[in-house]
Image (tube, rainbow, N blue to C red):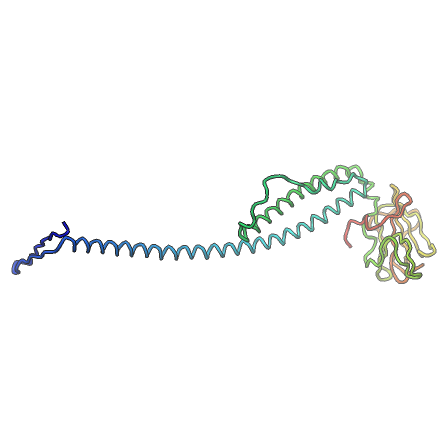
Length: 300
């Protein structure tokens, strides 16, 4: 059939002469085939070209979004680290309160807040942003569980302390003066002899005349000058607690006087066995010297 010819009659207007045009069938078929190939090829390459352009733009957008998300997760991780530090301080406060009021301690295994569930995903298959998102999710979940746990424990403490308000008021629990901690509690070198001996309180250095305040409600038991401690005030807080304030410049209370936490009871000096103006502060309970820092809950 391809060897046959098709005859086409070309008829011009009324003044022209009709013409006869014969074309082989194979030529027409080939021409149509080539036209179709060219058309579909053009469409295919145009589609690939524009498809690649769209995909490239999408990839660029996704990469930028990925970078933005990673930056946000980095900032969130920093915020979570700060929150974690605050939780550590919160836990320390809770432990201090329990020690102070002889409340039962919390088992450390209970504080770990262990959880079960599926194993850890394959981090190697994740992008940097996905890994950061996973790590952040784990930390947020841990802090949420910790906050719930601590809220419950502080609720328990609140119930216990609701009946102990008077005891709380009479428990030394604040800094007795502003200044710098120049010497701590425990076995320390004596500044005069150089030998180690038990230092039964803490030393707070500041300018002469700095106010000294009562660290809890109580009654003035002693006002006087006593050897190495110089001018001294002793407060009896009840519940077995006694606080002592030494090396004073002068007193602001008298024996038998009742005081409230925060009342000024004297002024810092350099009397007695002292190398410079400072306060020697002690906390005793049932005849035993305690580390005052264990009972201080506020900041200066």
